[in-house]
Image (cartoon, rainbow, N blue to C red):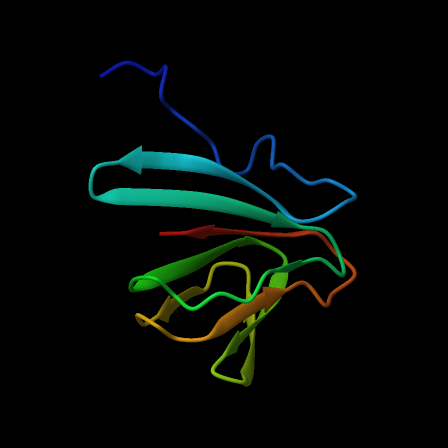
Length: 102
């Protein structure tokens, strides 16, 4: 198994001053893993979960709003989100935040 596909979620996190940014970490037939980078004040547009997903907070903290209920989610936490849940994710802190979504 070669190292050419090895990615480190702690390196080259795609922060920008504009809108939130994301990058694909894994894109295979039955698995898609995205990494999202949020600077302070940035947020992810409010979608309905199109499948059962999990968020793994890599850096900082985010506020995850699920069906109208805010939950502060911090570095190291894994937050499950069920199919069709109305959700939004925002960085209300003064530090950068990043998470992986499966």
